Structures are given as C-alpha cells and as structure tokens.
Length: 187
View 1 (cartoon, rainbow, N blue to C red):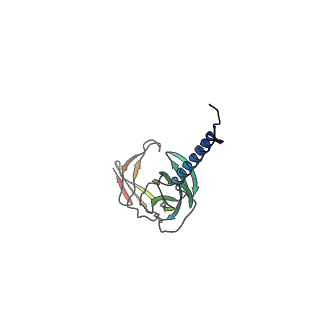
View 2 (view 1 turned 45 degrees about the vertical axis):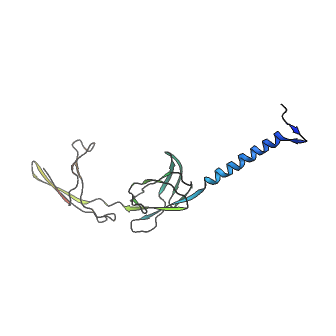
View 3 (view 1 turned 180 degrees about the vertical axis):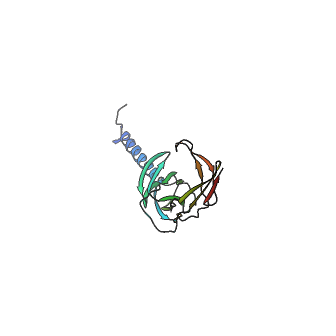
C-alpha cells in the first residue's frame, strides 16, 4: 500500500489524516468547554462583621495541596469538581465558623459552577484568667479561686477546666471538665 493514494488526482490518505486531526481538535475543544472554570474568593471577617485580611488559605484536591493564598484569596476552580478549602488561625484570632454554612470545621469541601464567595469568621482568643489563689482547707482539701479575664474573646465564658499534674507538668489529667464558675474545691 502506498503512503499516499491518488485516485482521480486526489490524495485521500492525506485528506483522512487532516480529517482525523480536525476531528481531534474539535473533540478537544468540546471537552475543554465542558471543563469551564469559575472563581472562588475566600474572605474573612471577625465575629462582629468587620473585614479582616491576611489569613492563610489552602486549596486542595484529592488530598493534594494545589494552591495557597491569604484572605481575600481568589482561586480558579474547574466547575463541578470538588475541592477542599482550609483557613488557618493567626495570633489572637482563631477560626470560628463559615458564614454561609455555620460549620465550625476550618476545612470544607466545595464544588461550584459559577463565581462564588465564602467567608471565614474569626473570634478573638480570650485572655487568661488572673489572680489564681489556692487555700489549703485541710490535708485533703484545697480551694481555688481566680478572676475571669477582662476580654472574653466575644463569647461568654461559662466555666473552666481544672487539670492536675503529679509529675511536674509533663502529663495532665482532668479533674473537673467545667467548673461553671471562678472557684473550685479539690478534695
């Protein structure tokens, strides 16, 4: 068989190769158009609603990190594919929830089909309590009291966890999960 077949002065094999290339090109263009993209913008605000910026954000797909940025961060996503967006905390501000879903998980899965914006809400970490005092009542009882912090981070403090260490602070065990107040009696 010849590489080029000439029938009535026309090269059909060459025409078939060109037709195949054209078909592949047209299929590729159709495939690319079905994989259109949209922009996802990740914003951040405090729990009062003030815009805050600069929180590290990662975009992953199938467990692999594919992009990072700082809020407000904008990523280009392939429509209908699922991605994981995760935001971090920084300094005295910690992630609280996603504004649109209320989810308190800093990592969330998302799939979009048009330009979208999501907002991470942050709260201030409370200051520590002050003025801890411990009074020995007997050989088997100690009473503790302290002053609640002046800044509660925007959320009411309803109690404190009391832990005990018997090895100089290497390991700790919880003796009271929530005091419900600023006092505790350990017996």
